[in-house]
Image 1 (tube, helix red, strand yellow):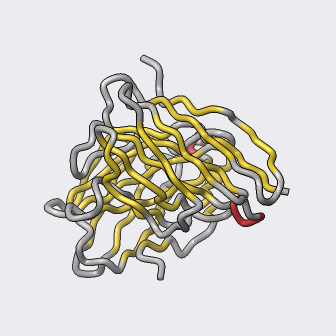
Image 2: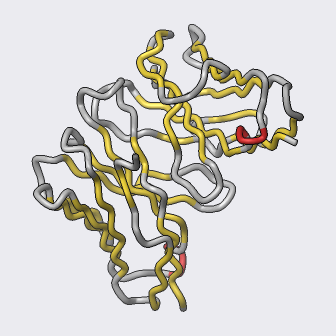
Length: 114
Length: 113
């Protein structure tokens, strides 16, 4: 049973345009959400996070939106750059989890074309 | 500051063998977590250790075990390797507080033949 799902395995965007990556979750106990970026042969790198008490968090070109009623979050990258090409994972945790265990989605491969 | 370091980077084993993977956390981090990433999937939680105590365990068989040392480094052991254990094994460190980001190492790519 996948508690965190990224339904788009891949996304292709033109440089300078907006990239929108989506993530859905089923566990209503999740209260903290994160996005990670992963390049080949490297570990995931933290991008941005959001607590369930907020519906938006912004950091430079990256904005994460959280819709708790729909159990949906999205990552917006504006403007997209070729260096953003990577696999993006959303992850979630619940305060009553074992420690700070993260549950990951399956990832979306973003390709930004010059 | 050094990030999370893992060794070895690559490993090839045969079915039935045992393997030990090592991880050193970021200085000042007391929590280490292990994740398994199978090709085409997201990382899956295996263990978390904090102050040398197991804090959480994912849905993995008893062939998987781990420990944390007084210097907060950690080892992941997998016994009786199966072909399906072939994966990227990621170690992550953090301060150990709730709802905080994890810092990942580059992983150990394990191939079981």
